[in-house]
Length: 210
Image (cartoon, rainbow, N blue to C red):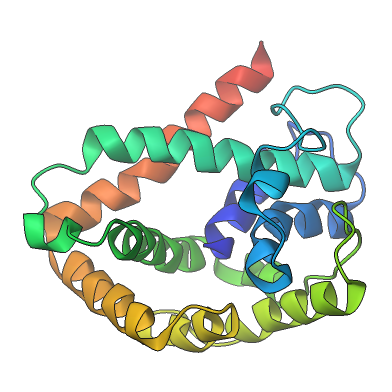
């Protein structure tokens, strides 16, 4: 979810030597614009135009933000596989709903952690369209993100409208929100989810210091 990506980009901005912050944060949320544009996930997450890693040379600030997104996706997924244990089997029955619910709970924590910097998520601008996306659709995606984070984002229900706007079926949104409520109500699981971010950040900072 995008507040987590913005948080990660913010926390790496100094190490990434960013100068154009508008483009940087635009890049940090760009890969998931695929939900709005219909561009295949491969193109925005794995394709030839994607930044390889955080240390790729000669990146624009947009590409630096894009790189932080891809880094977090890869690293956090690996950490979650190792740390999210003891989850009831019935909660894992729908892989997409479970994975997205975990990210939703994490995103609520990221909104809290951002504090006043949640303004970064409320002032996003479409600065580039690397895969030839329709610029009007891209602008709509960024506007929808700004509107989504204008709410408190302290309850899973706050994520429903944006999910529907991104083409998620209502029945899947219902499942995701119900699972997020269950996850957030379990203190041990909640601690495990909250622990993913600092681990991913430490790994990224270590890579950038090499």
